[in-house]
Length: 40
Image (tube, rainbow, N blue to C red; front, side, top):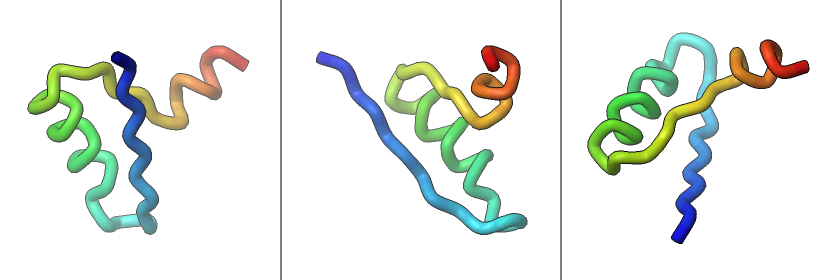
């Protein structure tokens, strides 16, 4: 079963770190906008 979790955030809110920690805790991959920029 695939899991996708999205987190909306505002600049400076710490959302990126929360996303990383959540992914680690759940044992799922973490991707953010940098991967989209790299692939494009």
